[in-house]
Length: 267
Image 1 (cartoon, rainbow, N blue to C red):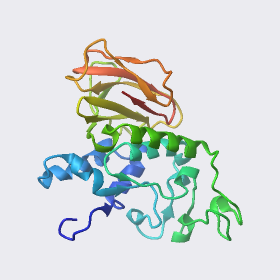
Image 2: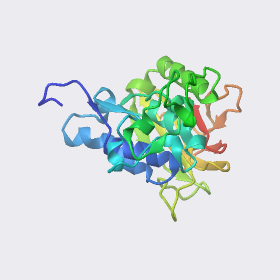
Image 3: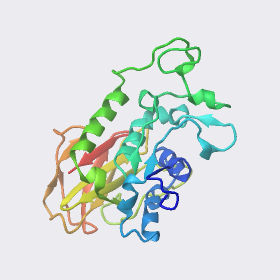
């Protein structure tokens, strides 16, 4: 980008492929999070260099990473309709410039052998979403649309979600043996957690890649910023949710419990 003189570039290759596959459990989380370490290899001093250099998105109008003429939106298969909010939340709370391709927040599920199937008419037309014609599909009551708005507001409120360092967190089922989540078998159904840290503030984010049931795990947090017995408070989805108690495990950790395809943020 510096050679060409442009300010930012679209991450529609490997970045998009990983951002699509991780929430569905078909890629290891490191496949996505390690992409942002490239700034260190470029001797930029911090991986946060990428925060305003790469535009990240789940869907787009070409889907070039899929290859050939097989075109599809995230919601078109593999339970994407259940996992789309988790995927959008991952997109909006990790490094990069988050971009939402129109219709993703409305769960559009276009698929077919041409670009036209992922370029549906939003406000009526001969070729509309969900195999429709002349249908207005901007639904402000759509729950995914409404939750995206809430997450965006939280992102705007907390600087560390926009500028903070980013860490994929180790998890544990028993509170003793920790490691980053990986695919076991053909699909990963697990808690995937990451922290954004800016100054003395840490926000812990996590998704559940299991669309059919709840998942729980002990999740590592910054050892030096927290003390045994302290608390983390939920800032999404429900601030009335019981706070999490910090425990001296793998340095420091908290026990997260997420609903099917859920997303949470704790501060």
